[in-house]
Image (cartoon, rainbow, N blue to C red; front, side, top):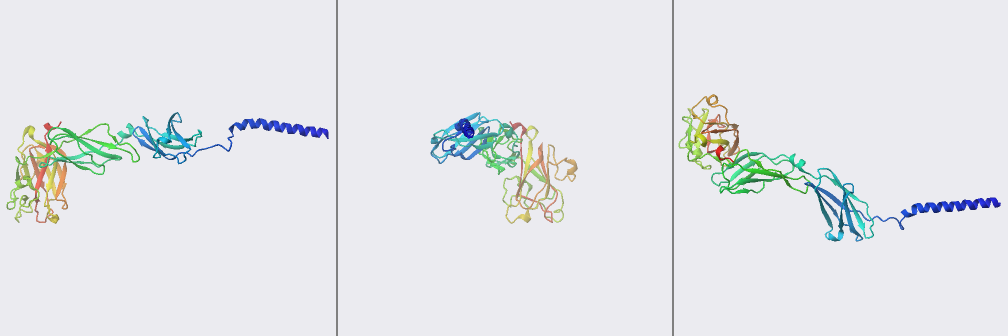
Length: 398
């Protein structure tokens, strides 16, 4: 009986001793009332910028939370914030000088006693030079100067992916170099005021990702492939037409009189039964410019009856345009063999009174020939109210 009591006492002492040692192991990790975890940051967002990232989150509603830390690069970099410095409740900070790779940011709240919250994590990548050079620039379609206003209508290709604006640098008529207002990506035509005809210009575009915070301009300006092109000097030019292809007083010279909307100032082909349906009908413009003064032609514009109800009276259909340094005869029935390749071969429609075309080949010459191959009209009528041939002098470009 005594032996049994003795064994029980030893067992109880051993148990007490064992529990005491275990308590010293875990007691240091126990906080009275349990471990305190403050509320973690909310609504955190990381937005990509050019070689930088904007991190944003909202200040906590709990007034006991005093500060926050932002960590990145596996907690090797950090930045501290005091919420009292942000009375509007929104914290924004920019981390710059970043590489072109993904970054993870961890935001941790701290209360006045130094207790740390769980972290809020956001990840994104900045965009840099590699991203920028992968974006295509617009291309120039045409740049035509209006001889009366001195303004240029510049037509570009449509904006490319993530493009936000395009601007232009050009020389004004007084020689001053200026920058124009910007062209939006959804637009492709802009009117640039008071340009110096015949001079090259430059353009540059800016880009930004859909969720990006920075607009970044391309690293360099692009030079226009053609300058501001202007209309042939109408005061010096003369026009001849295929024999017998004049109706009443609608002389061919009227296509170069600068009047685009007066029915009395146009060329109308013959209405004589004997030759009205004869093709080709040819107009030849002699610019009277020779040698280094001959223009290089780039664009051609046809003006037809502008009345709203004139669709069936816009007769011009298939047209070829030729440019030559040597004289061309409007009565040359073998033009297609004798004149080489046309710089323009198009079919006009009856829906638009004014139709402009870019030459498929820029060519320098004294003569411009317009060959009308057929007509929408069953009697073969051609009715041209005005014609513009835009170009430039090679010697003027810089």
